[in-house]
Length: 572
Image (cartoon, rainbow, N blue to C red; front, side, top):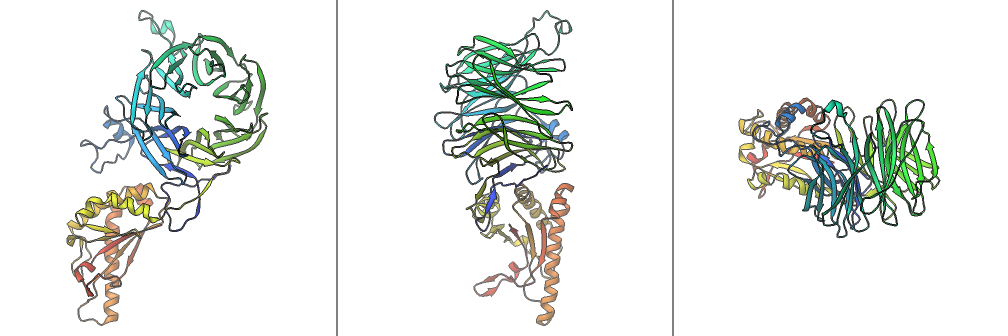
């Protein structure tokens, strides 16, 4: 399979240069982005979920959980999956990140834009309720509704309607009277569950549909006459059959139709075309039990106008599809071989003929879940990326050209952006005159307790305490941007004197001493980390001994005390 992956997160460089538009946001534990939309200011916003770890008095000293068991044991009513929104600018820079905190754990499955550039986000709580949240353009909460049946409900999609309201599409466990024995009544049967909200967050109606089998709502599209066509999924034992349901604006059923196939078929997406017909994205198992993409074109009377299966070498499915103004169809999803999965992008003509496809990912699990066609015909995509040899999924946003190649952007930012972030990160230490940071990303320690005594290189308790707190801030920052930094250089320095030795001997002895100061600092930082961080630091750290070549000069005189130090510099 073809692999292409460049991580861009808060890009900074010394010189403007083209880079690929791909943002991976690495946070502890599994997280994902499941939907994406274009903002009115031409940025993109994606939603999904994040699982923050608890930083409390009953947690670890450094605020970081080392394994999932400690994390799960620490959970309280304020910790768990949170709806998460990320806004990304045209230069692949993150403009806004915000978690939406509710009284219950919740995950976001869809986002739509409001007429004033705000957001309506839909999802479900982890205890079986549905959620609609309205946000303003800065992601401040305007309203939120937690609703549903007394049973287990789940959302699959949120669809923007022409009146500015939204339709929530999902499933609900079938209601049973309390007198009905669980085993006599059957297990797990569910129905298609629809809820319509106004643009102000008012619930207009909720209704359930289905068959005696397990039914689930997958997606919806609004017809020109205001009726709504729902794509659903029916399951009976090991059998899977897509269904299409048409309802009125008020949710009254017009018709319900099963889409038959020789093999098990899974429903993914329904799209209204410009010709007022609809395309269904399905996947159907072949003779080798590999999923293959099946596309259907239907009209409003459930007549099938076109039915085509796209055969590929690997198991493939399109999780989302959109139509270009020229009638071409673009889709994104998942392609899977024997060893891993990649994000899949496909371009098809109006007759579903495959024009081109691209795979994006690493050697682990990657997937595309949603796309939006941007004003300039580029394509924003949201999904997940998994680092090689990792078990945790990360949030992933990419931008593709209309030919499905990853967009290149010319970054205009400089080290100034990192300089600003470091100033904010160490604002307390700067205020306390412990250190100073220069625009070239060098960090000088300026507190008297952090200097070395004459001829000394062994760290004092004060130096160790400072380095411990310093590394707890600096290392996570560097790790978060690890693809952008090449080196963290730790340099040892000395004053110029060395007893009665001549210049040559004094320089060599001071060079050795400065190297020892650098080594003792690197050793302490390195040895206080876990094994994963040590492996990463082994590729990042560089020690150097600069003797007295960078001694501190104050008013044309050497400040010998301040010269006996170590300094840090981040190299891009």
